[in-house]
Length: 264
Image (cartoon, rainbow, N blue to C red; front, side, top):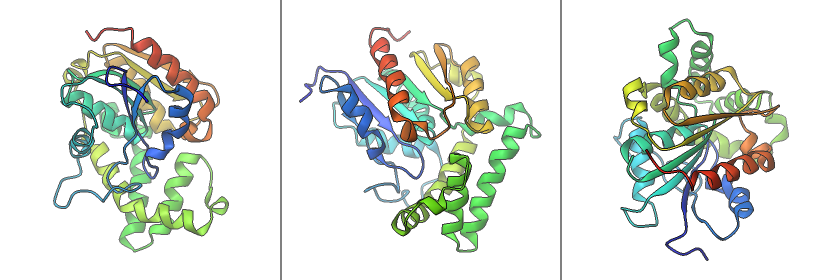
C-alpha cells in the first residue's frame, strides 16, 4: 500500500463515465503512487448536482476538493479527461499552491472558444451538440439525448452496440451532462487567469478527435505558461477508454517527468 509520503494523484473522469474509467491507469502505474479516482456529481455512486447550486465548474471543483482523502495542505498531481480535464484546470485555479502538475487528455474547456468569434465553426459545432441534447431532454427523451451525445464523441452511432442497461445508465446521467455543458460554456477564462497556472501542464490530444476538442487544446497550448502539447496519432476523444494502453503510456511518462519539475 502507498504511504503518505508517496506522490498523490487525483484523476477526474469524462462526462457519462465514472472513476472506474481510471482502473487500468492505476494498475499500470503500480503501487508506488497514491491514487484517488472520485466519481463526479451525478456519476457512478455519487449523488446528483447539489440542489440550488449553479452550473459552474467551481461547484464541481469544491466537491472534489472536499472529498480528497489526504491532508488539506498536501500537494497532488491532477489527471483529467474531457470534462474532468476542465474541472482539473478549475481546481488548479482555486488551489494553485497545492496542484503540482496537470496531465490532461482533451480538456473540453469550451468557454475559451468564444474568443475565436461567434462564427467560429468549432464554437458553433459544440453549441449545436449541447442544444440538441437539451432539446431532447426538454421533450422527455433522455435516450435520444444520450444517443446523440455518444455519437458525437465516439465519431459514430454506437447505440446499436450497447445493451439496454448501458443505454438506461447513459440516459439517466444526461441531465447532469446538460449541467456540464452549461458550466463549460460559462468558464470563459481570461489570459491573465490562465497565466497564473504556473505548474507544468501536459496536454494530450488525439489527431482524429472532434474539431471542438482540438481547438480548445490548441488554444490552451498557447495560453498556459508551462505547457506541452502531445498529439496522439489516430486517436479520438474517447481514447483514454477505447485506447487506454497508448494513452496511459503517455500519461505515466508525463507524470514521472513532472514529479521532477518544480512549480514556478
